[in-house]
Length: 290
Image 1 (tube, one colour):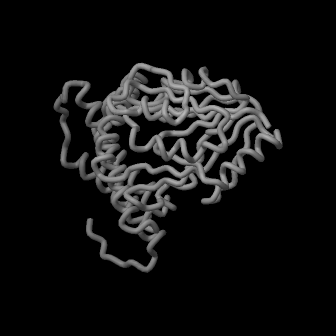
Image 2: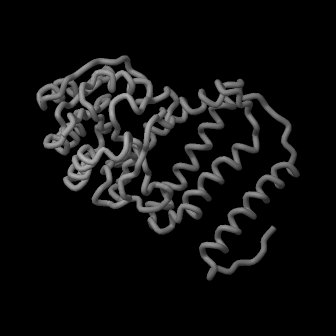
């Protein structure tokens, strides 16, 4: 069987790292941890658990450091794992079978996102396929936040089964969610500006609304109960903050907005909301109110 390197990028992951490494101990030929100037005991823990540890400057998200981490791996195959993730025994066996079968050069693996203690089966959180296992040299990352990896060769998917998914302990509480939302929204707004986006005030209404509709209705987030409702609303709020940040980058300039313009935008979004309610909740009846 080819040698498997597990690559983990870290920043203050002392609490999460032991669980991640324990899950791949019987799979990895080597563990490579690239730490981004942690303030806690992440580096010491990684070394104690047998990882080869390298340093990287602190960045606000993982993509810029991922190619560097991969370059430090010596294995024929690379498994990318985040410190707040773990591999199930069934997935470990599946990965070993993949190495022996030589059917593809890279694989997308489903990810089981646990948010506020709940497995998000809907709300566009499942199967959350990510390219995480590949032959070295066949996958690389660009430096755009949440960017899609660049691939070559033949790709394949691991079956979208809970038993074969990466377990992602995503947001344990609201503080964790808000901390990441604040950090990521800043980066995403900067990317929009860099790519030439100019603030357009209707986006303060349409972008958050579309995000909510796509998760709660199109993604059937209502099947995740209160978790689905809360996360859909939080993701909507994240979109709002991104576009307010863009407005701020232009100096919070005042713009003329008429009541008629606002009414037009809200009416369109209300129509979209009602369309989804009627589609997903056909039993619900209400009066026309606009």
